[in-house]
Amino acid sequence: MARTARLRMKVKAFLKRNPNSNTRQVYDHINSTLRQGTTMNQLTNVLAKDPDIKRTGSERVGSTIAGGSYAVGRWRLQED
Image (cartoon, rainbow, N blue to C red; front, side):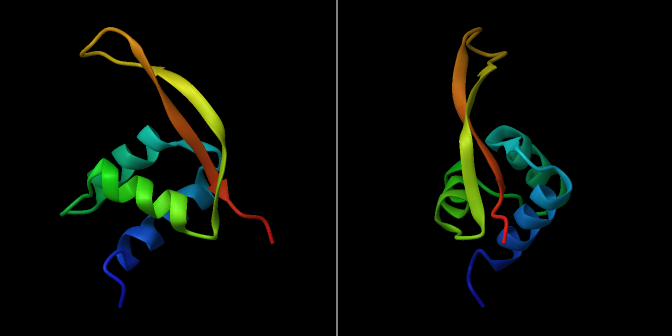
């Protein structure tokens, strides 16, 4: 079983219910539902390298810490 198999299943289930979600939304959901959670680095690798997940663009989100904004990717499941 792959190291990220459980994470991949959770991400795909989330994207099935919430198509066109951004990276931050997926990250927050995963870390609130899995006991171990994940790192942003591990999550972005899963999102970028899984053939069933497609990047649909990017958006800017505000940062509460720095007061600025940064770009995050938008993701959806690949249609058959």
